[in-house]
Length: 458
Image 1 (cartoon, one colour):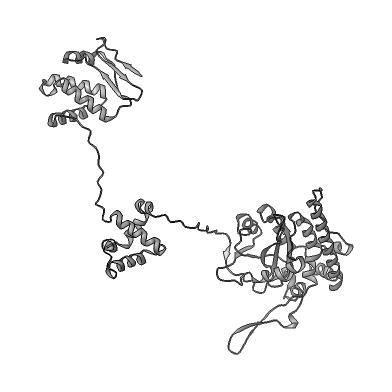
Image 2 (image 1 turned 180 degrees about the horizontal axis):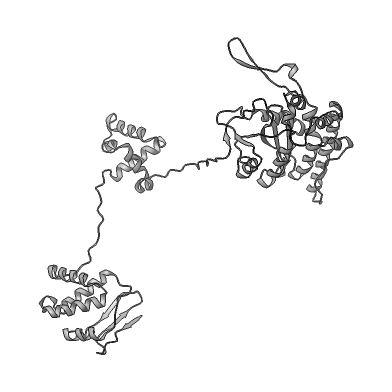
């Protein structure tokens, strides 16, 4: 790039910029004050582009030496000053300061700025001692680490620790966060789990009223390199009314519709929803669903293993007992839900007796739970035994309708139908799995419907 001076005096001056933006000035013809004055009167504005301050200082010094600035008269000095101002773009006061410095020292040099730094109290070797101590002891607290270094100096006589042992605890933490310390040692920590502020850590307090359910998930094994179906088990704390459902995956898109259906499957109004700390329930989607239904959302407390003990015991005594532990493909979730709705859920709520505890206080004041035989009843019988049981029912559900479902057939008759339907379901699942393994297209397995089973569906 080339910048040419448009002066009346042709060829007085030429500014040339080379490829790396360094200034090359060719003003050899400017040898007298009169030539400089003519240049100032006839030239346009000029400026240095891409030139450092150090290069400008070098050029100014060269101009002052060439024109013997110190020996010039006052008027002539003013011409040189205006010339430097025009070319460099510096202000009058700045150019005057530079000329005064040249008169005082005989040269111009860019002053290098040096930041003020406080003296370092702890040397690199002492920071290394701190890092080594931390590595050996596993990064203890500040007071414990300071005590170790004091013992190294005072008790064991290691003179290297004489200065670092006097460090304050606050400054010890400063050194740990310094770049010097972190460049010496490498410390890796596990990712800390995020605190999810969803749900309340509390044990449900039903106060003898139904509608406070405990919920949990059960995985039906792995097979053929794939995950099996997931069961969701929900149990009411007071009546032990239980609803079982199955989903392909525990993702929100699969889980939320099934949860809505399960909450609507209970005959009474749901007031509480208690789960463990699994992410399948502790998420914003489930919380939004429960808030919409005005249901209190609680989750297990730390170091309280019995908070969700009721549903976990039902996982083994009901779900595992009826469905086993063998792998069931995810595509069978719809068939399983049909079986749960028609057979399993009516059976465990209307035809399967449960134990209900009674709290007794002995003579020493200790509360003990006993399970008398008179308290062995089905969840529906327990619901009927509650005072004002009808007041807990959902809209559209009456005791008469529940009595009709319970009295359709005896316990043994319903259990016989359920066992037969379960056997047919598993046979269909096995046939379907075989066809899929051989590569034949096959629709999802279905549960065979019986006349009695379809009538029992609520």
